[in-house]
Image (cartoon, rainbow, N blue to C red; front, side):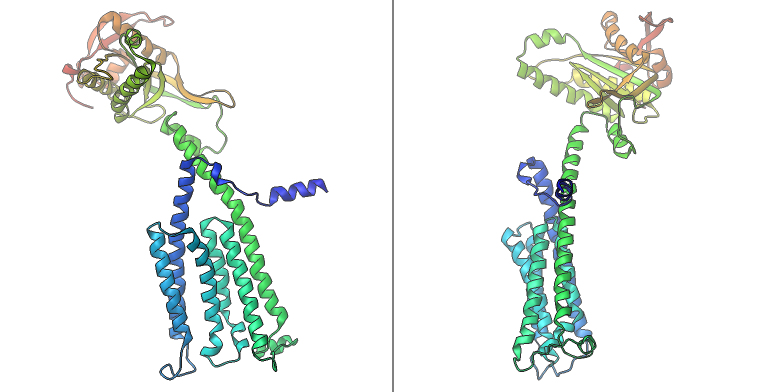
Length: 451
């Protein structure tokens, strides 16, 4: 028995406390609900126009000049209310109390329209109980689901059920001498008689549809809120990993895990600030962070503009890749161009409290692997391989050679000798590599043509 009760608890929707959600999530939900109210207003306007068209086309049993016609008046009132509500919703000024009032007014006007049919067509009151216009009640109930709040659906269903019971009560009480009640189903279908069982079936149907939509809507609201939270979180976390990795995670059929990655040719760019230790000793922690962030924003801009992807910020260093994970056919030339622009930008400005920053850049091209590393609960994207290590080593060598940019021969060849004026500065034996590496430098003033 306990297991059955627990299953029912899991099946039935629990109350959602949106006040505990972050403000940005609540704002996202609020904007979604405001757009839903605009959509509801347009649908309501479509419904009232449909009613007006059907009334205009329907044959009349009276002369409109000689008789009072209640339907046009009801439709006019509903039209005015709908337009007012739509305007308020469009400008985001729909007061909360009007949301509840709108639900009640919708149903009251619809049921009032149905009630007026017996006057319009000079029939006994029971005449309107056969009107197919009752089906619009379900449209109005379902319409409230667009806001993703079950209470509006429930209010609409309760008002509709009580309203229909009131219409039935009016029929059987308007003429005490002839209540029009019958137990014969055939007579009910072929006359203006009232079959109470059939009317109760309508009420039960209204309440059951309301309950089903309310339960489904509450469960869907859970998913909506979770989706908004996940989307907001993913948007924030996307700043920590390359955008291409974010797209791959979104489209992945399986849960991402450590070890997933790809092998390919890439150009690796490694930057480091000259004399950063000395600079940091002269700054407070707050000034240091502010200066670093300002520096990073300046250096990252040309890297990303030329198709580079920032993989890591390591202290004052930046590790960027071109052609991995995002494809960049001209990756070597673009990396060299980005390095040159970085040097130009740093020469033209200062940071923080008039601090001049210079950086060294090492660039290498070769095969490497980019992928997710870490544990089951925490992952990060990075690139690995001997060619990545070589780029970092070239950046360090720039201090020994007195230059700001050092490029490997592989990068120079792929970037194009005819596009940049590379200057051979030596040949180095990097630890862990069997063959020597020929290195080059390039100056912003030696740039021949942009890629």
